[in-house]
Length: 420
Ligand code: GDP
Ligand code: MN
Image (cartoon, rainbow, N blue to C red):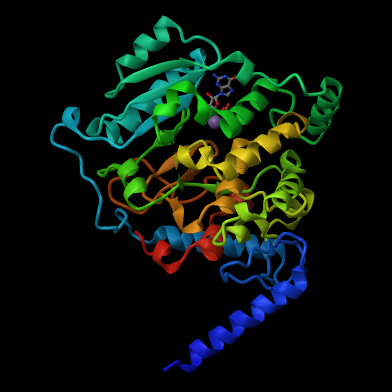
């Protein structure tokens, strides 16, 4: 017997499909940006943000920040998936996942990178001995390599990046680039004129997963020199990703500098018009389209909220980047020159990619990894996070940058919310 609520649900679903067909029309490839109700009905691929609010953006900032505080207050321990893999008694004879620690780093960052490695080793890797890949467009010095060797428990690979891949393509119009960089500088966009920073963002967006050394790996944990890891991790996070079919893991989610990604979204829509089938029916569209908390950002970024997972920490599956949807898309992005005419970061690129082309349930919030990259810290309320003092954003004036509440409100299923 079909109960009344289920009947109603079916009617609503049907109405949504019909209205979506009416709204979208026949030849738009299945998506548009017109206001309307979005449904999660399979096959409905409209990119529409339908949540409304009578509150001011300032009120929403406060409300979202308060919600975040409440979420973080909850005492947690570890993911309750029931399949965590514990540290082996002998890490030298452990059957590891196909995974590596990964860092792009300069010789002069030896001190800060060692500081971070010591923490990663103490909290996690001493127990599992995962290898490390160090990437650099310059050769690493002997001093760098020798010092690193003293601090890692797994094998260390020191790798150069082919200059032809690292440096900006010849197709970039230098005049246009100079004008664009000047404009970004005027708008106070950080690193506007630093070509190496643009190279770095492009490399992490489009190229790193094809580095010859990384071909042999599937999962990576990206870290950065000078970041802090506070919490003991007593399970294999890579096996957690694999066994629970996770594609992408993050700790902190933020808004971006809107001027840096003005055409990222319009270009993406151009691409999607050619490849509507690449969209995942259970994508995290609302995270990308939200326009309530910082409407000026969504406006300047032409429809993109600028919300992203902060990629200076990430654990992810490179097979996703190597798949056709992501790789076709970033190659298209690259062909537009936006990494140089604007300052597209690898964080928004990874985030938009995984939110459009992957099932949002495969994106995991690692709320048990207390983490800090200036100026943001995110601690969890669990016993083994010594030194992680503030379960919040350190600076009050940065509260409006919090996008984690959007992730929680719009994209996490009850199962995901209760995973800890
Ligand atoms: P921010 O976090 O956005 O301020 O950027 P960072 O300066 O921390 O750079 C991000 C990552 O890329 C860090 O791991 C840096 O060590 C690395 N990085 C940035 N620029 C370069 C570069 O020109 N060469 C190399 N080898 N690494 C770089
Ligand atoms: Mn950094």
